[in-house]
Image (tube, rainbow, N blue to C red):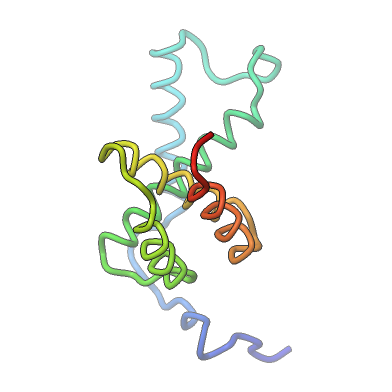
Length: 135
């Protein structure tokens, strides 16, 4: 089998580097286990009365938020960002009661768009519902 990577999209193959990643992960997992024991009195165990999928889902959303923040802060242009520019223009027609209200509305639209694969349809639906006068 030959190299099937897309040279316009894929990164180059890795070259020899420095710190072994999995070894660092093992150390971090050990430390996290000890932290959990100090905090909760026991390590993470199965059948502990919590919904592991719900916990993992929330943690994954937090992780994605932090990764997105870091990429935006370093100046990365993420796929779909042109949609945000259009949303910002359309959101300008909304009546803004308070700065916090404006922030919450925009955050809700962005969150909904990120959660839905059909971006254009979802943006349109959200903006229409937000622009309609309150009853």
